[in-house]
Amino acid sequence: MIKKCLLLGILLVAGCGRPEGAPPPAAALAVIEIGREDYAIAAVIELEDGPAFSGSLVPSRQATLRAQLAGTVSETLAEAGEPVSKGQLLARLEAIAIREALLSAKSAQADAQQGLDLAQREEQRFATLAQAGAIPARDLENAQHRKVAARAALDRAAAQLATAVKQVDYTEIRAPFAGTVGQRRISRGDVVQPGGELYTLVDLTSIELEAAVPAENLAALQVGVPVRFAVSGYPGKLFSGHISRINPSADPVTRQLHLYAAIDDPAHALVGGLFATGRVVSQNRTGIAVPLAALNLQGLTPSITRIRGGRAETVALALGLRDQFAGKVEVVSGLSAGDTVLVGAAQHLSAGTPVQPPRARTAL
Image (tube, rainbow, N blue to C red; front, side):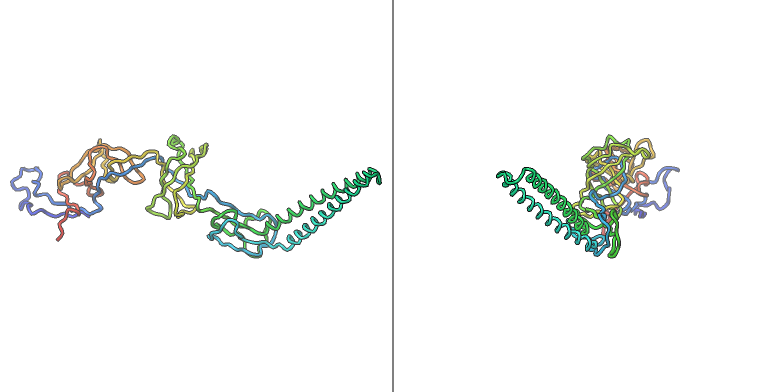
């Protein structure tokens, strides 16, 4: 808010003793009291610039757990949003028939092992008799064939047992890695079929940024280049990261390149699905900066209104890097660090107008 306060030296009669059209003497000008929102201080800061992007946050590791066999859900042990550890049991399917098949497979393997043991002893006995000439060589060959068949039967039984064990394992749905349950698609009593979706699991410790950048900015995109971005849900807060990989092909429709960035988020505050806007930091340097809103760009050269000696004055500027994301611009020449510049309605004050910022007021 701007207030006018007349000086004690205002002339009693306007224009008395002045030629017509001449400006009033300095003592007759009103002092403009400005509020905190009407000025800014030129300060040395780090400025950044680069291609803008928009995108979203996605977990770099996520999984959809699906049923490996048909069955009825007997129990669910994890809910959406619940953290789980690697190998933790999430759900069970009915396993009565499958466990019976497992017992049968174990029994068949035991029988096959006994058959092999018997065939091996028979072969040894026939070998001894054949060496002594008590039986023809044909009997020994038959015993050897029976041993080979018994070993093959044992191998088949072992394979059937392994299949039965795997089927039993499929009745227990376990987390393949530590993470957070994204969705639970099943409830107790549901009948599922092979391939049916059961759970989604995400690793929130490995969120990454997926963004699109116009292809004409390709030269600014390199693995390792930093990025700065804001996300919905965290107003006024900036996050950082660096490009981890770049899609080698531009989208044939939008002509944009997709990049992926690893995010510096040790507190794991971010979640997948949030919308993000930011920029690739292709340039950065330290310099004197003022708000973009303080610039007057209507003349041939940029200018700014500065307070010097308690009065407003217009100063021509040479500008450098523009940090659109922070709303700042580098001033190469024309200002010094610590200068007070006017913004908003106050920046349109005429040169020579007395100005009194809040920090210069005298306490009553």
